[in-house]
Amino acid sequence: MKHIRWAGLVLALTGIVASACGGTTTPAPAGGGTTAPAAGGPTVTKDLIIGFSASQTGAQNVASKKQTEGIQLWVDDVNKAGGIKLKDGTVLKPQIKFYDDESKTDRVQQLYTKLINDDKVDFLLSPYSSGLVKAAAVVSEQNGKVMITAGGADDATMEQGFKYIYQVYTPASKYLTGAIDLIGKLDPSIKKIAIVNEKDSFSTSVVQAAQPYATGKGFQVVLSEGYDTGTKDFAPFINKIIAAAPDAIVGGGHFDDGTTFAKQLYEKKVNARVIALLVAPPEPTFADIGDAAQYIIGPSQWETQVKYSAEAAKSANLPYYGLTAKDFTDRYTTKYSAPPSYHSAGGYAAGQVLQKALEDAGSTDPEKVRAALDKMDLMLFYGHVKFSTDAKTHGKQIAHDMVYVQWQKDSYTNRLATQIVWPPEAKSADAQLRK
Image (tube, rainbow, N blue to C red):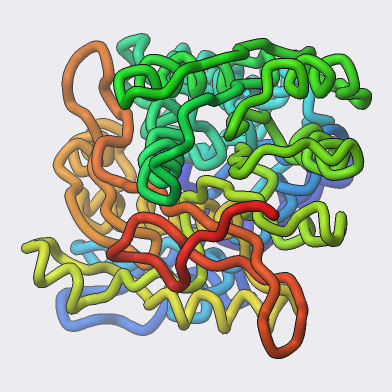
């Protein structure tokens, strides 16, 4: 690929760009260049520059930081293992180049244009959050750059006939369907559901799928209303919820609003038996709101308790690739002194997907990498990964399943912790009704 550069030259150039433009480049370990000859000839080591934007500031800061940490851990692991080895003997040493997108879509478009045209990155990963992913995807597609997305679940983004965009996350349309199934099993007397959601593309996609799914399961949707991004005071919505007297509340949006909403529902003593919210509950810092977090359920792309393994892959007649969930959790916790969230796992998994595609392609040629991604059907520590090859939904994730967590108090320590409560085959504890 014409954008792959010799190691020494790239380290110098990217250092200049980073200092001049305020970006961040994480270099591969020293020692690039030509390594010892292999049996079939000399092994050539090259740098692979991977670009993305990260929300180091702004509304998406918390989850984006976790995603970036997962990407960084993948880079560290690959380079410690000697790089990505291609069939012709070439060894690729990944480096990451990223800038702060400030959680703004217009800045994302500017930065991805810069990464492609000025920084000459070889491949792209996505920012965090569906709105920012959509902005990055348009630029990536227009420039024919392969981009692996983590942090973006909006169905609409992946239904535009893109050829170069590949989605790791389970699509938004499947985010709350499992929660609705859980509600029905947990307490069959629950009949009335309120839906309150952020009015962004991702959250809207979730509830547009959840509402007909709920009514199809026999539930009555007694309230369905959206709130503006950045809402801090949920009193008007909570008053409407109280008036509608639902048995369960589902919806939410992202971390900040979901956390605030959960806290205010608790403070207002809203008497719903089940609350399931998007994005915020699986994040470890959700526990910072104390007792307001207890009993809250959230859909998660991944949790540390998952049992994806070589044995599980064999049972599913799938190949298994990479490290185990325990290895990932241990390495992440050691590096960052905190447990990984699903955002962390998604970042690492996006790197793994790109790595496997490069290995299968035996090349950095984008068309060969695309062909490898189209054929991909495997299990990672993150779960089953496979992409749609239909023209309209090309690159959309079609195999990965959600799990659902609930914050519960440990009976011995009285401390809050998450447990997987759905699906039944994955659960680490039974779900509990709010008291």
